Length: 133
Image 1 (cartoon, rainbow, N blue to C red):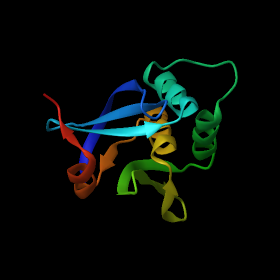
Image 2: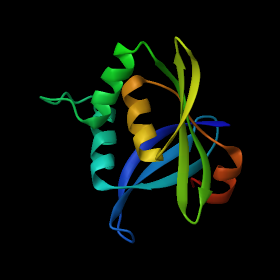
Image 3: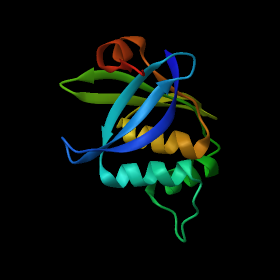
């Protein structure tokens, strides 16, 4: 697993969606993950640490995890298939560790709110990543 960070969100005109750019923390490779406009907005709000009058969906999930005393230990982008990325939430709970399948956009939005590390499996980065020049 390669540790990454969100470096920016940009409009992806080809798909009329947004690309969240994940960059290796210790390298130059980037991974564009296409997300919907609502997810892009949620991630952008987390990056800017904007408070909203009422909790958004990802804020609500964070509140629920906090109330349940569950820790989001990491998020992992696990695979790509037919241009679709897959991710997992890794949770530590009182009853043991859990792995929950997730869309990468939701996993990233939640990780940003919970200040949890984000990783990408090396083969995913090899298949879909590019070197930042």
